[in-house]
Length: 357
Ligand code: KG4
Ligand code: ZN
Image 1 (cartoon, rainbow, N blue to C red):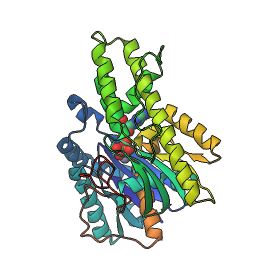
Image 2: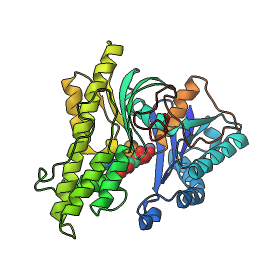
Image 3: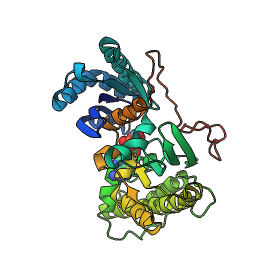
Image 4: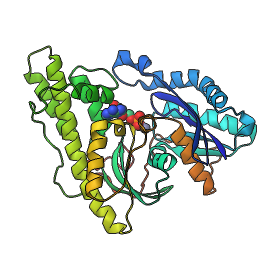
């Protein structure tokens, strides 16, 4: 089975060709960073127009790199949500057009499921597994029981962790996107213990996260320093922030591991996915935790942690194997929780599952 995957839900336009033998035949990603940098963050309308402009060319490139034509495809999968709706529409319409013209099955993939199942593409991880999904819009702990079968153990009650990285970067005067810049600055810290930042939710029951207090503490620390911040200030603050995040992650994951083991005594892997999973300090911390807990640890290669279309093609393949396809009247979904039965996060009764969660 050869599947074309399309990803357009945020600020990366991507196309990939993946086979059911877990072979990535092509994986092209066009970052829109340059388009959004002047605004300090992603502008939805700018993103949608850039997807529209580049997607056809990227699909052509992916087909060429894979050495296949549209006639060789067995299906087309596109991110159907959640995400910035203008971009999602561009990807879904393109996928539907190809599917209609070539009479191919079409699969609308949940972007989060793309991240969630990546470890099966890269490492053939067996169900069930415990997943820490950490990206620009999400921060969740989930038990992955199968495609479409997720049980949420915890989520953020305010900001997503990637969002916290991005805001911290902005506060300390690093560029967008913030995560990689914070990681780079933190590596240059000479006195990482200089700033004492809080560890929100540490030791609390449950597996939920909170990052707004940490962000506020970074803002206060910045305000208290003489301006402009020195490179040492920036590096030490970045390191303090990253360390606080790692402490919180390890604490929340430890609790989730208890819940996972209780429900699945036969065991399973700890998997991390999503853009923030590209952070090496965090990966090392989680690897240490998994080791202590006697669990295999799986983190996809860095380029498959951040947004890409190989994960969308693969999630499409997993759905196709179960005989699940979508019709051409599928409507793009700005919100699409992995576990629709999960209770709204505490502190945000207005916000149901699937919104930043
Ligand atoms: O999964 P992703 O590419 O897009 C979403 O679906 O949100 O995640 C993007 C997020 C951004 O917030 C970015 O700052 C963060 O992942 N990120 C990182 C790193 N690389 C990307 N955060 C921390 N360390 C990194 N190395
Ligand atoms: Zn993503």
